[in-house]
Length: 174
Image 1 (cartoon, rainbow, N blue to C red):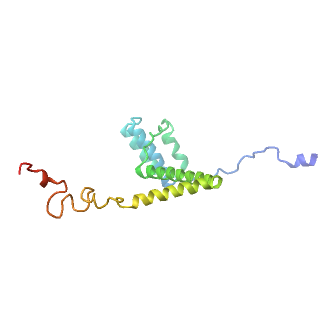
Image 2: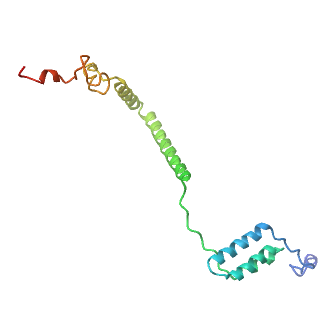
Image 3: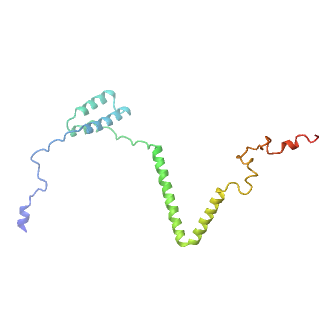
């Protein structure tokens, strides 16, 4: 066991012989810092001269370790206010709610149909009867009410008189 302990290095983190290479800054890194600086300028945290100097330094930075010092003394950007959803999002939510409601009705109908098939047959028969009654044009008195229902002769007889019998009641003293 002493051999094992002797073979381990005494320092768990040996010092690095060479300094690690500096990471290069990308355009996206620079743009993020510039956006922060412009926001600080708009909020009045920096003067125009300070903002100009820092933006120029951000665009001229070659390494990532040069960028944090440009914004180190600035408070964090406040969270933006929530934005109301657009019409597309509202339409999508409406569609999802409608689809969920129809699915629930369908499932409930299937459960009832399995438990009470006679009830389902009776409801379907009633619906079929209602459809037939709605599809029937006016019933047995269709010819008598043709002039009054908005179709047919528009309230005029073939003689040119209206269907109310005005010609009989105009002058009773004739």
